[in-house]
Image (cartoon, rainbow, N blue to C red):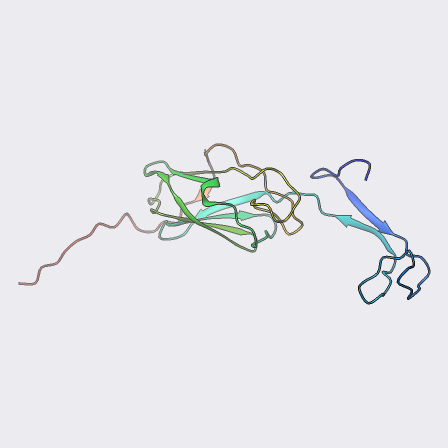
Length: 173
């Protein structure tokens, strides 16, 4: 390529195969068995990054789910420290684990969020890289999710259903 393809740019590729020939020395793209690749016309390349659509908490408040507009790779997880979750009443919450399932990113929190509080979160992406092996949230095409700024209130559906439980002891007489 003369110029790099940038995120969001329309790009496609084509391949014109030479006449089929099982010779391993011909100019065709071949598999290991010597089979020639067929011609390909105008295959679109995905250069669009996944974007955050919504976020919600679990009923117990110890998981924050970030929902994206497309499926994400689950093979290379960013470090838990790249995320910051802040409750308006409960303060900063340590993210203890990160997992991806389809288009959802699940952040396990070491302490639960409180019922009804406003939740803010941020994500600091790894250096932008098209390699699918870097430690960033990525869509299935390897496009990195961009940094989601300093903690800002999101329209997080706080589904915490119980107030913070306190320990009580019942004494039997």
